[in-house]
Length: 175
Image 1 (spheres, helix red, strand yellow):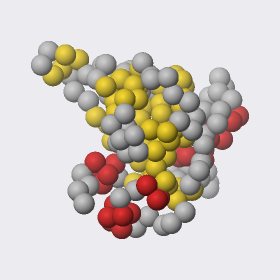
Image 2 (cartoon, rainbow, N blue to C red; image 1 turned 90 degrees about the vertical axis):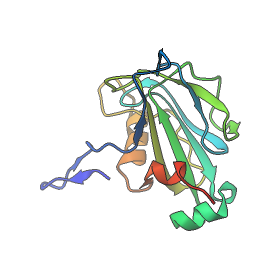
Image 3 (cartoon, one colour; image 1 turned 180 degrees about the vertical axis):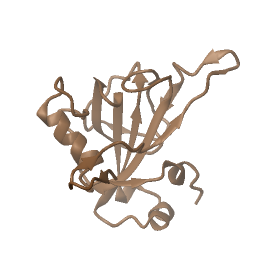
């Protein structure tokens, strides 16, 4: 969550996910590596080259579609969903809000979009209210972003409505 400053304002400077990348593997750069859906679900947000995430996708996996052992290990309350965010992407697949996805389905490729110093995949996980769709996109507070983009950013990162979850909890889960 953001830090609360002495004057009661918030500072949104924390890193809220896991960055995955490498310089080269077998002579190939990380840029262009396929990014696949970690879980079944549906598209809850698609962002095209906006700060801080660049090209980004959020997938919602409803409570009922999560493995019961994962729900138990996370303590996820009923009526909520697990949301996975994939950022700094390139070559997004032709997807739209609400499109269903299966685990392992291609989403895009790793890229260098948004606020980043090098190619990597930013993978972020949160749980929050089921059925949330971020229409209008998500973007950091800048003059060239819309009110809807900034409101969605605030909802996602700073409102306390969506609760951070360590992405390694999901990536290392074995029932």
